[in-house]
Every structure is written in structure tokens, then in C-alpha cells.
Image 1: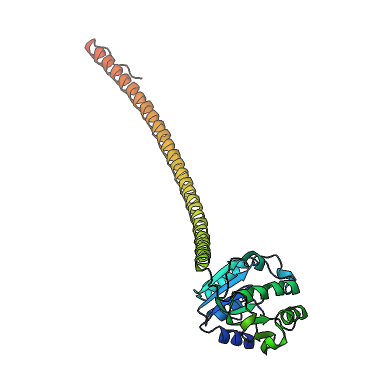
Image 2 (image 1 turned 135 degrees about the horizontal axis):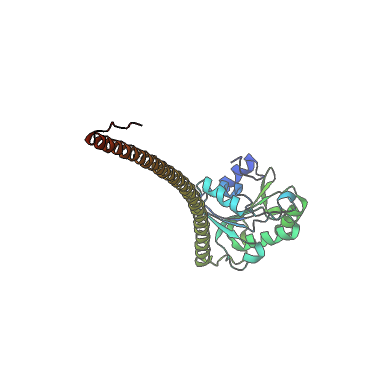
Length: 285
């Protein structure tokens, strides 16, 4: 997955894949899907929460840009079917995700301390008592301070590069007996599928419009050729008609001249005949 944008090292990817195996995962901060796909390959299901507008702390150049299309395309290219995108911010979805349903929460959202604290509070609420928190960018002071203030240093189990993996949260989890609202997540998944279908239909319509425009241009080109050919045919017919008219006129003129000559010869013959009858010598001209 080196072509997918993201900041996971190989060691971090391996650790995430290991703790996600056979689990239900909540991901907070998906970016373009590198970590999402890593976990989805071993997890039962991944709920990927991200507002897809970037994180100015990590990548100022990408802040404000919509990464959702790239995220969806990367999931499609990797043939990942067990990811449910949750588009929004932590505060938008905090009250609707329910409690005590996730096995693993991977946090890699906004890296401001207050944002990390909000993400950890969401993770605590969603995780089972046996659930783990995996927190990326542990080397950043605001990230590390937010976790240690909320969970304590004794909650840290393992650090791989800049990935921290906690111990099971145990009693630190909030409301762990409440089941997640599956109907809501199903509705979210349906809406996501509808959006995907809508985008596909829009692309097909755009392709159809391009095809129709191409066919219209081709038809106009053929029509012009037909009109040009008809014009040439008309010119040829007009030329032929003109030529035939000239030939007919010349033939009529020649026939008239022949008629005059014949009439003259007949006149001369009559005069010769009369002269012989009267015993006069015939006149010749």
C-alpha cells in the first residue's frame, strides 16, 4: 500500500493488523485509507470516522481538501468490503455511536490536545471493557499528554515507532453494558451505499452525455458531407442541362440551314424544268 497517502510505518501497520484480527474496530481519523485498509484486511468490520477535511497540524498543504473521494477509491481498488465510512467529526457522532461495542479504537485524528481528548472520550465510550486504544503520533506532546491525563501512564502497554497500544481499558470504559445501535449503523451504511450509487449514476450520465455529443458531432459532419455532395450533383445536372440546351440549339440551327439549302435546290430545279418546257436554256447560278 505504499501508493496510498499516509504516515504509517511497516512496523506500525503490522501491529495494527495484529490487534485488529477478528475484531470490530472504530477508527477515528482515516485520511486516505492506509490504516483503514491495513486493519480491514484482518478485522471483522471497521467503522471509519473522519470528516475528510484534513489536519492542519500534520499536513497544512492538505488542510481543507476533501479526501473522501480518494478514500473511497482506495477502498475500491483494494477490494475492501467490510468498512463503514462515518463522515463527520467526533463531536457530531459522539451521541449516536452507542457504547460498549468495539474491540479496538485506533485514533489518528486532529492532533490538537483538546481534539485528542475528545477522540479518547469517544473511544472509551464505544469500547468493551476488554477493548484496546491504539494511538498514533505518540511522539507528539499534545497527543501524549491528552492520553496520559485521561488514562494514566499505567495504561500504556506497547509502543511501536510512534504507535502506542494501551492495555484493556477495563473499568475506565464508560457504560460498557450498552449494546451499539445496530439499526443506526445499518442506516448509515445504506446511506453510504446510496451515495456511492448516486456518484456512479452521475458518472454514467456524464459519460452518456459525452457519447451523445460525439454522436451529434458525427451526424452533423455526415450531414454536411451529404449537403456538399448534393450541391455537387446539382451543379453537374445544371451543367448537363445547359450543355444539352446548347447542343439542341446548334442542331436546330443546322437543320434550318439544311432546309434553306433544300428549298433553294428545289427552286432551281423548278426553274430548270420550266425552261426546258419553253425551249429556253436553263439558268444557272
